[in-house]
Length: 323
Image 1 (cartoon, rainbow, N blue to C red):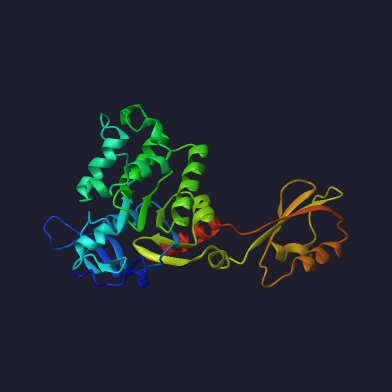
Image 2 (image 1 turned 180 degrees about the vertical axis):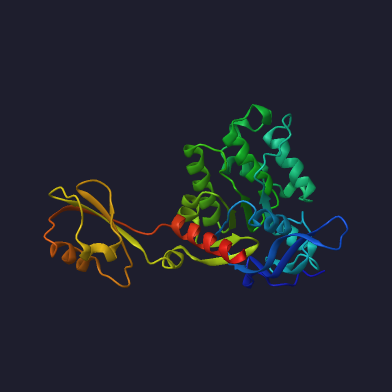
């Protein structure tokens, strides 16, 4: 037994040089490299977002954590337990909510949770079925057929199934894919509540707004490589670009050449978008430059870099390098 490992002082998830390759049928040639030497630490108690385009390796990464895919090389520790030498402890430390809804339509939510708890070896006296149903607002439908529940209820039940063994780490794979805005925000609230109670969350998502709203840190996977990993603010600082949209008092047909270095794009005969780097040029100096051209400004709007721009820039740059 290896239960003497002090998991409290360990990262929630730690991977070192994680690699996964899929071999061709002859088992001699590599057909596809899904993960290429990933190194990552996810801290206890944080909400970590994993972004990446389709085929980036997110699902492979999660399936390795869940024990559904065997890694090719590297080391994976979950809550301080190695997935190779401490299999049982590692599995008990994590709950995975897949993107697909895998529910028996003729089981009630209560039955589904009880069955799942039994599969994890949770004794009846230690099961928290009622508490989970209450926390996920499923008490009123606890004894009804799962097939009669709404899509949102089914999503919540999937989260409940991953919580039956009280794991300190919860992995959510695209939890809001295909759901409406109202349900998405409800699921966000649920994730935040779980995190406040001490659960570490690993979230994969296509919705960059979701990562911005929920996550303490964000990692970006592309072509099997972890190409960026940091706080939102530090990721935003990677692109030092701002846009200034200016509305002028009078109409114009062309702009003075003095403003060419601001990359002007004429939006209308009274409105122009300028793009500049904040570290090289201050906002007030731009306005002074415009005033020196005898152009009177009546309104303006500054657009900051958003996470989507960072994501697109990083993945595009990484794609061109990989080619």
